[in-house]
Length: 116
Length: 112
Image: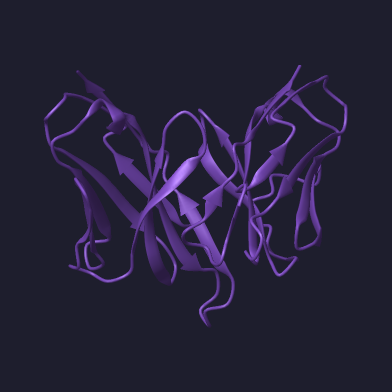
C-alpha cells in the first residue's frame, strides 16, 4: 500500500524564521510529488516535482526531491503570518506496472503556525 | 472562470438519509476528483474521472458511496444511507491531470 509520511505534524515559529517541512514516501511506480498549501478552506497547488536534485522555487518557498532516499523537503524562508497553514504532500504513482491507472496518496499534513 | 463549484456548502442530515453532493468542474478540465477530509484520516482521494469515465474508485470507503459524472460539466457523490462516521468535508477538484488540481470550496457534511 502506498504511504506518505509528513513531519513534523505541527510547527510553531516566529515571523522571520526559516522552516523546513519533510515528506517521505513509499509508492508503487513513482511519477511525481506534489506540495499543497491549505489555509482555511481548499488546498492550493504549490509545486510538482518529478526529478531528483532539481529545486523548484517560488518566492520564499522552495522544494527539492530525492528519489533515491524517497523524500522531499519544502523550505520557507523569512516566514510571514500569511504562511500559517497546513502543508500537504501528495505522491502520484501508478497502480499497475504498465503505467496504467494513476493513483494519488496524501500525507496528513504539517500544521505551520507563524507567531508575529 | 468561476473555479470549481460545489453545492451545498453545508449539509446537516440525520443518519439513514440519502445525501447528494454536487460538483461543477472548471470548463476544459478533463479530470475530476472527489476527496474526503477528516481530522483523523487527513485528505483521502475517493474516486476520480477522466473524460467522464471513472478511472480509480479504490478510495471509495464502501458500497454506500457512489459517484457519477453524466457529462463534462457535472458530477455527483451520493451516500445512501448516511452514517455519523461519514461526517467530513468533501472536496471536488478538477484539472488536466493528477497534478495541478484546482479544488472547490468543499461541502461540510454533518450526519447526526
